[in-house]
Image (cartoon, rainbow, N blue to C red; front, side):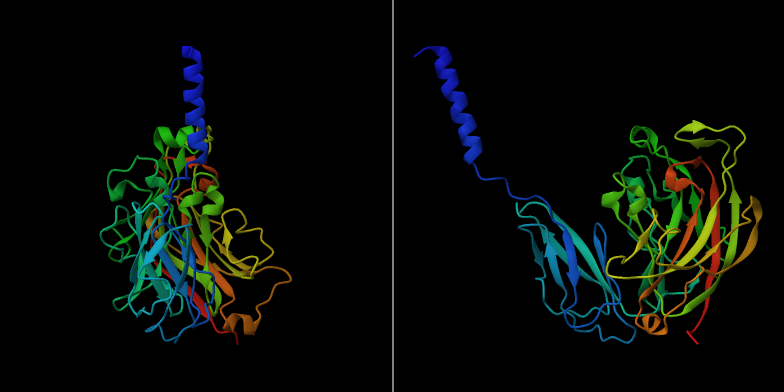
Length: 361
């Protein structure tokens, strides 16, 4: 047999073998969705890269809940889906991919209290590579703030927790405070057309899976709130960076400025949350509180922003009682940071914030 015929049959055998070989087992180990069959959840769960947060009404007994999970194909979870646990404390779950090699640990929490309304930015979760701000009642975490830190980690730029855009400093109005700094994203960020990352902190969650493909939709704003917000108040300091850039190119004569705002909106099955792409444009919006006179200041400066109800909007008392309205508070060191416009080094300090509210009556 001629050599070229031998090579032909060998190639044919290899191709045939690859076509009939079983597909490699799935190497993904993700929780895709979660539900609590025993109780009514007030809003959709927040599922991040390694955490799941479930929301139930105040006073719900969380001592014996059996969450059920949908996982990536072929994956398994331990403890098993549907087993009963006491969620007065967060529970750890390990998801193992179909290939039996890749594993991921999730922390699953059930929040059964009202949204926190006073924020001193003194508490963070320990043992993390970047700061995660939390609000506590006693020893229990009742709210975890979100930021874009998880996305910034993908750039490879930060070496310590203080190198991220969102972190904590000790020079607060009282004690420690929140520090937001607009950072360079380095070579990788510039390559992706995202040359800067504004420091941000908000009520909601950050979808790291969308951080590169659709960064505006990665910021999921809001958590349930059963009262009518009237003001957002607190203190800030701000210093703009030296060079304002748009698309990575310097803009002469333009100065950066911070943004501080809060929104209230109605949730529905089709609109469970708002994000960076529709926070000010969604028809579900009910009211907005936003700073309109932000300035550079070296002194702690008080702000008190009234919630303004949008034309034609009102709050349904029954929906409010059932947790069908979400509230989000957002701070950022660069007003146009969501579009990667701003000045590297712009710094916003925030402390002693309060969400002021009244009942539906």
